[in-house]
Image (cartoon, rainbow over all chains, first blue to last red; front, side, top):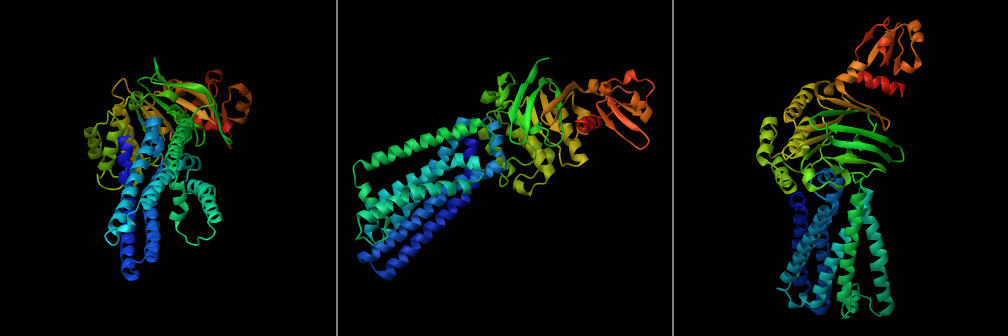
Length: 235
Length: 280
């Protein structure tokens, strides 16, 4: 397991670098906009939305390579090599899970860093709603990427797997949330995702239910991946 | 002799190909050549032996364990070489050593770097810059640098020039100096096996044609060089394969002694394989 983790992180340092560059560009853009637009409430809202976008992209980039890496390792049959060596199916799944967690944590910390730096310009960037959103999104990204593994093995392509899970997540989760919000708040014309999320995250039951669902999904996809490997014909 | 690999009646069905009731064994301390044309089922059988595919029927035992339930300790004793590069192409030798140290408990870095020096492989160049010969030497070095007792090789010499093939076969012979070591080597370059194989397993279109001791097999088979008239005298059931020529016909048979008047030649493994395939 240690060997696989070392291998995967060695091969994919560039993704962290790209993610870091996106984060740095985001902070720079935020700083410029703050200076140009001033610190009134409307401008801060717009900059905040833009920063969220940068943060989400940086986080996605951090987690992106795990699927691509699996894809490459299926194509060059390194997965077969490792499974024929002393890496068990369980250890393989656990390795994928650990790297998923590490990447998500790195992405989340990077986003916190971006928000922290922007606080130099205005303390209101660091607010509970943004942090909740980032935390929730980090979990979403972790589950999303983890759910790709069995499909990547099935399709032998992370792009196809990403497209399938992306469509399911987009039309099954994000779209219904936006539609529900628009219907219940017809007077709100802003595009701030915080407005959509906050009514849910404010509920006391939301956090435990969200964590529970994510943990259950991780457990389910771990089991599916294990059985996919066990079934064989991986590469 | 005890078998370190025992394949008993495995079947595996794919839409366009099936393994049909394949059985053979690899006696401990021997080299078994696994021959057959491309697509005959060699790689599928090897994947089944390594537990990488689940057969629809039959059973495989490797070093005394079911192939689908191989423990990590047993896997440590199996060295695997697949055809071509099976490591991430952006790794270097130094990095691969660290990766393998984390995969195999018995990984021996000293031995691995010893092979690297012997094979003159660069330590800091990415594998994607390696030639095919370098890739195969790297794979073999990796397979031999842990507590390997059983080497399973899937086409280790395909696409290599004769000098490189000879070098690689020498490495296998060196590995076989230990009497507890065994090799299962699939190949369609049968001439490689003339030098090292103790047994030959021949698979064709997913069916095992024969598993025999190499010398016995070569002794048993004969190519009869006959005219049309002589050919008509040969019992049809004695003809394994027939190659018609303008002036002379060639018949592969295991009953050459029945036809003392017809000149007979000893065949090579390749000729035996070709005759069986042509007839099949």
